Image 1 (cartoon, protein in one colour):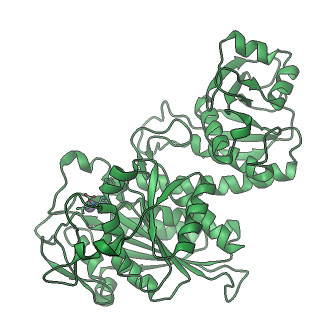
Image 2 (cartoon, rainbow, N blue to C red):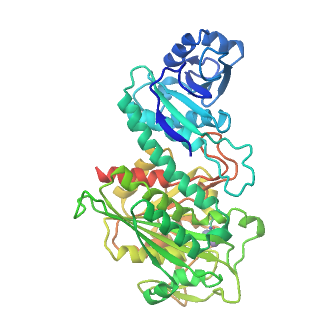
Image 3 (cartoon, rainbow, N blue to C red):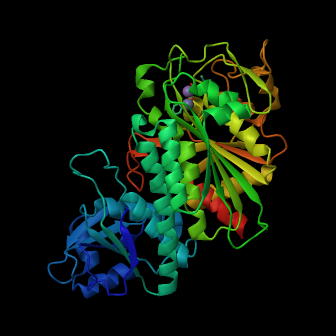
Length: 505
Ligand code: BES
Ligand code: MN
Ligand code: ZN
């Protein structure tokens, strides 16, 4: 990720390769904002005239490239559309800043003037944070496995300048928080983008333990022997077809300020299937193309937890990452095998590809044993989530309206979209088995996402609980042209962080 800083120089003097300013107004009638016009004046160009001369129409994220011809240190000026000024929110700013980053030359230093003249929907430090977040995330590229890093929009440095009326303190504070969120999100993206051979459960557990140690989290790895001892039959069953055993990683964040943690205890549970082949209920080959992303929930939990110390969160947080590789083999669970979950409930596995709920049920049951104030799980759980809500909107379910509202508000603040779906009692009997307490699938083509949620609900007891199904939003095969590149999105990291921030104050 680029290095972020607050620049006190003037826009014409700031040491950068590219300077970016914003234009507001509907497509067709976009005008340079006040700060952009001031930059134009300093560059001795009539920016409005220049833009109309090249036929620039504006609109959110639309970029005009104007050479500065020696009038500024930066040889290139980008004018980035924000859309109508009245409609600008933190999310539109993130998107426009992402577009700026993706339009800067590779390995460049980009300086962005945080606009001073916008309505109050996104003001002060939140405005600087949004610009830092959008540009930082927009410059992400996964290059670990390239022999030559070519053609990737990756900034070396990002400098923010304060537009007219913004204080240096606001911009500095915004940069600091934005940088933390970018780093946390890109950590999750890197883990999800990692090829599945290089993140098999024991290796991923070790990598997470190292990362956790670096940010002051304590770590306990429950290995296969401990899982057997503890009765985690779901995690073990899903993992038994693989030549690498499963793991349950338990991360703990204990806020230093608050002995006795006055703001309570939250458990985060992440689905961590490092590759989902389907098992003996094997997926068709092309359906496996993105299944290295089936540990995106676990990645979101470690990403979010990596930021808690730096943000001074005062809530105690436990993270449970249920890691297993779902593979077919002579040792794999068979269709109609019965597994016993943590806590004793039994399940008849009628489809080995409905494995996420099997590993999560164990982790949720274990999490509930500590009677936390809230428990949130995040999982690439059902293909049906993509059918109902598509690739941009996650499904949100749960047993507690207040917690659901909190998650919804946190997602809104983060610019991550979620939609509340029901957990209808009427469908609970779809999971009834003739042999065991439950089976792990419902009826064909019927409410698959809700059935997944209903299955999980059986394991949380009375704990206030919310469930995020991110099957679609976790991975983007196209990228969105704003601040999300192709591949892992880091979905959920920023929602979880904002939720914990809200519960922390
Ligand atoms: N990991 C998949 C869900 C998924 C599908 C995530 C597509 C991302 C993109 C999950 O384990 C799965 O296979 N679910 C099955 C459940 C079914 C067998 C009840 C599904 O959705 O088909
Ligand atoms: Mn599956
Ligand atoms: Zn899966």
